[in-house]
Image (cartoon, rainbow, N blue to C red; front, side, top):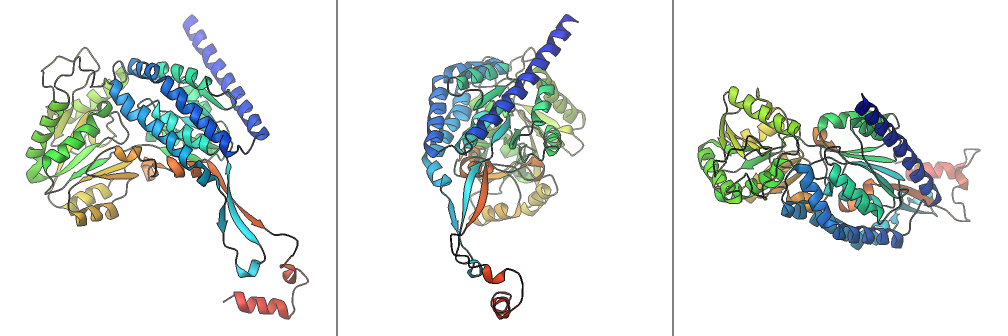
Amino acid sequence: MVADIAYLQDQQANLAGMQQTFDQQRQAFRCAPMLDVDSRIRQLKALKTALIAHQEKLIEAISSDFGRRSPDETRLAEILPAVEGINYSIKHIRRWMKPSKRRVGMAFQPGKAQVIYQPLGVVGIIVPWNYPLYLAMGPLTTALAAGNRAMIKMSESTPATAEVLAVMLKTVFSDDQVAVITGEAEVGMAFSRLPFDHLLFTGGTGIGRHVMRAAADNLTPVTLELGGKSPAIVASDVPLADAAERIAFGKGLNAGQTCVAPDYILCPADRVEGLVNALRNQLQSFYPSLQKNPDYTQIINPRQYQRLVGYLEDAVNKGATAIEINPAGEDLSQSRILPPTLLLNVNDDMKVMQEEIFGPLLPIIPYTTLEQALNYIAERPRPLALYYFGYDKAEQKRVMEQTHAGGMCINDTVFHVAQDDMPFGGVGPSGMGHYHGHEGFLTFSKAKGVYIKQRFNGAKPIYPPYGGPLLKLIYKLFIR
């Protein structure tokens, strides 16, 4: 009972503090609604400096939240792309902020038209647990580049990371500029109900629906970065070692706890056995042991571990063949380490083929023609990512044009997310809206059209009272 009371008091304090922070940020924005370019660059440079200075503490905190996570994976998948994203924004922000000149039609001369890019105001960022640093820093970078203030709701599953991130950001920003919010699911839902000027959510599709409903009450525009079942197509002629190497990396990264990880493979039926062998060899090379291997990440918490075990048991009970990649034959039952596992003979009745896997299980589905593979993808919800492995340029073009996905790699996996000069975002069930780079700047800006006229008023001839030969001439010239 005492613990319950303390919990409720903490939640109420979090909610009250969150509302106060929001009010402070909104008031601060009203006092400074258009930061100049030098101020924005200074903020971004300070953010980069703080990120580099705190990287070891962040690495340790993320590993603590996961139970074990490779420091190199955190550097490669979180710190490096975050720093690169900041550098990219610093380099291009002056050009992004310049008003865009637009054409004025002859009927509206003399006059000028331009589009100016104004900050929206206070941006809300909801961060998932799988990449808690990068998925906070990426949206924050582009929100700051656009001149906004930001509140970041961290996942309750990564408390150590949230604590270090909050300390880091306080060395750079006051709470009325950037603030970190913590708390359980109730705080998260209250966060999504705040009348932000824009809300970006990264996470599961089901929660994304709740976030969008909550935001709708305030007509808050949302960017939803969700997920889905991202397929990898293996062509009939690609060297299997090439495909296996890159698929194994994309799936093994963070033990598959990645929104753009390959979720399943479509492989020519006569190449399935060869692909299984190639994947087994590659995964054994990457992870010769699992129990004490610092390169192989643990599943984040018991709930997610049991979910994945449930998917695996359900698939096997319904006829799937599981090929566990555990080279050292270690007993992992007392840990949250789940070995990479290939699944054959899967079908749509299995949970593993109905839900995003978000773990190291990898179904392989045979196909006979590329047309059949493309139809299989088209019949299912549009994924966040799609991967094609094949060196035939005509087939590459066909797959690019005849599939829909948030993003795509040809002969690689996951690396499209780190390209700052490309938008990142989902489509349909895998999300809406874009961020990263210039698209992120645009997402967090209001592109405001401005028509400018000086002393001479060329529109006088069309003012009431209507009629007369001049108006008839205008109609004759322009309505045709």
